[in-house]
Image 1 (cartoon, helix red, strand yellow):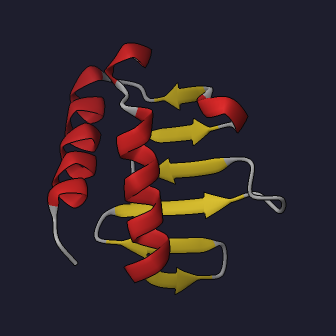
Image 2 (cartoon, one colour):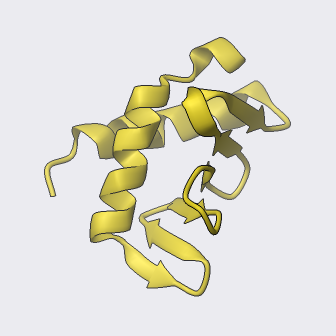
Length: 86
C-alpha cells in the first residue's frame, strides 16, 4: 500500500488545503481532507475519516488505514483535489 502514495501530489494537496481550507484549532480542512503540521513544519499529516498519511522530512511517509477500499477512496479524494482549480 505504501507504493500507492504519490508524495509530491500529497504535498500539493496539503498546500491547497492550508491555503484555501477552513482554519481549525489544529490544522486546516477542505472538503473531507484535513492537514495538520507539527510545531516545526517538518511533519505533515493528511487525513480523512479513515486514512492517515504522515509525511516526514525527506519525503519519508507512513500510511495508516485498515482496509484497501478506504485507501482507494482517500487516494481519489487526493487526486480530485489536486486536479481542482481553486
